[in-house]
Amino acid sequence: MRIAETEQGPAQIAAAGVLVRRPGKGAEQAASVLARAVETGSTRERVFAIRAALLDLAMVRAAVVKAQDDTDQDVALAALERSLELYPASGDGAKPKERAEVVRKLLVMANSTGVRSLLARGALARAGAREVLPLVKGDAKSDNEQARKAAGSSLIVLGEYGRAALLAADQDVRVRTGVACALLRSAK
Image (tube, rainbow, N blue to C red; front, side):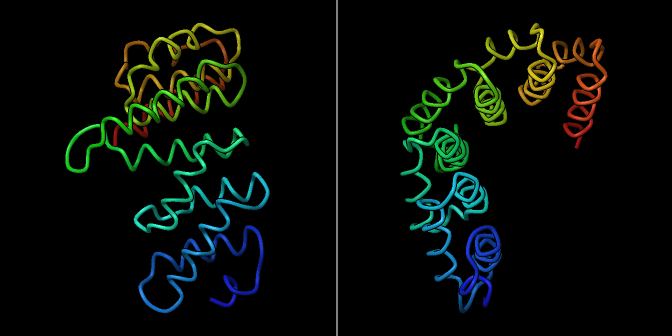
């Protein structure tokens, strides 16, 4: 609790992330620390706070939802990815309208270029959003080995094992290894 009260930055966020998950004294203060960290600080600290956030808590959830439209694209991407947890595609608590909006925003990012687009594609794939499949299939044919490696992982989580198998035999050892590891992780 002392760290959450006296420290700043990543140490404070990490401590708050632990305390918020434990009932009792300090949990409410820890939630406040996380919510504030999502809204302020460096990009790195804000993304860390979003990833450490417990979305069951109203103030933290509100901060993450607000961050979906942040001008810092890295913060917005992290918030959108976590927001997919708030809006399941089916089952209890399904919120198709909200989920569709989050998927739409992520698809805009996924259609851009660069590392952020690969991260957005991965987030969509992990959430089971099949709308990303055409982009991922394009990445599987890319000259960029990072794009092919990310495509392989995305294809696996989307259940496209046949397409991913082609990347498991890629000419680049990093692609082969990454795809093979993703395949092994999926076997759990």
